[in-house]
Image (tube, rainbow, N blue to C red; front, top):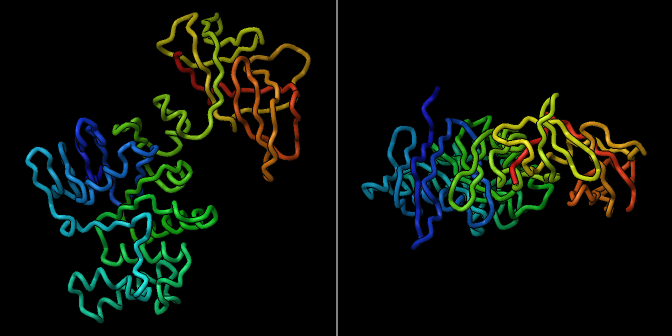
Length: 362
């Protein structure tokens, strides 16, 4: 297994009595896109700033390609400009008084690269990022998406060992965000640059990253591939933070043919895989809304792995319909196809796939 491009060990940053980052361990493989995902205040931006050298490390170490960038034990830290790390900020920080080409050349100029070589390398990265045709245009005249590309080109032009992205798409509209996700993915494939970005947007993290670390209160709750985190969450926080969850409370019962969860007066039950839970425990059965098969409820009692629900409200979204359902003693939001519509008061049958359901102790 290749040595990590970036390794964080016991990384800690305190502000008074509060640990903004509390002893996290992370590895980034060469050429990987890695996301730090979590709500505001979880420590993801502080982590990024420590890697960049813009924030002090109170404990732990940061190493990159075998070099120690910071060591909280000794207090030693490499200066930011010596780390060969590029950073793209949320605001882009494109200089409006320069042309696109001058913006991209500027980091090379600051490094003492000759004029001819600066122009050659800037021209190359401008073509890669699709900006070759606007190289001579004022950066102030560009759209938000184009300015984001300029910021990326300027960060990549001097071939950094690591590219940091701080909420890079949050200032773009929904359509441009989707386009820029594909653009960043393409640049990663073509250039092989290792990327670490922070975001609170789960769609952005799941669609862009090879691996994701979900952070909460300065700690890492779970690290894994996007599908692993979404389909096999390790903690309730990860389960609830990533996407929607249909949660129904019931009683776990061990029967002759396996373990099932029963749901009160509806007499519904779902087969489950459960370890560490005892017969009679109160539990929550959880699944993703898209894993439910929805149809009108028959008059018969629920079949195995089938829940009953009542539509409380329906909202037309264009490509789908969003329903608020009453299930047992709780409510859940699910999405259905626009060609099969249900109205408030309709009774529905929800078939659960036991392989995609998880059980949690209450």
